[in-house]
Image (tube, rainbow, N blue to C red; front, side, top):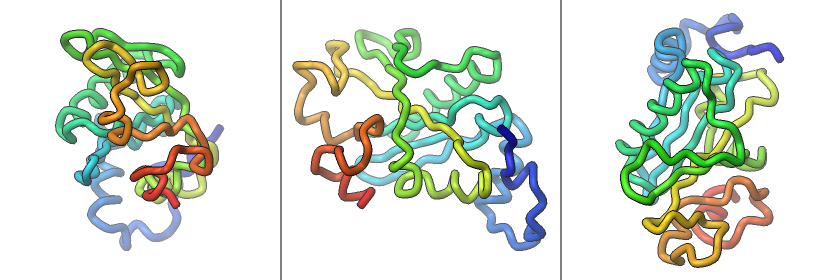
Length: 177
């Protein structure tokens, strides 16, 4: 699949790019990706450039401290760069201390426009850029889709593997609709 992002394709508007797009293009050129933090409550962060540079899915995290997510996504992007992208439906247990684990899930495309608009702007006419959600467990190692996951944590990270229309009511569905 070809990439038609701001770096690969001249759309004739390079002199009109805003500071965000200019910074993204530079970061994607070196080191190969950028991590954008969205400091809302709850916050989220996501990569831009992994698809362009390595044909690997972009990664997104939700509900932790924005700086922590930024660091974790950069560590995962380094793995992508080294040829070891995190695959969907796998768990990662060597990035966080204690019993907290990470899991990788494919995201439904219905979340792309409401949550990743900057990515759409960067990739422009590129179709099918995948995104994987990096989901964190509770302190006992349980994930949101498992029995016993604390309800107080449920709203911190959306279920992006579900279509927006099927997502439980709450802040993330409100954000997307």
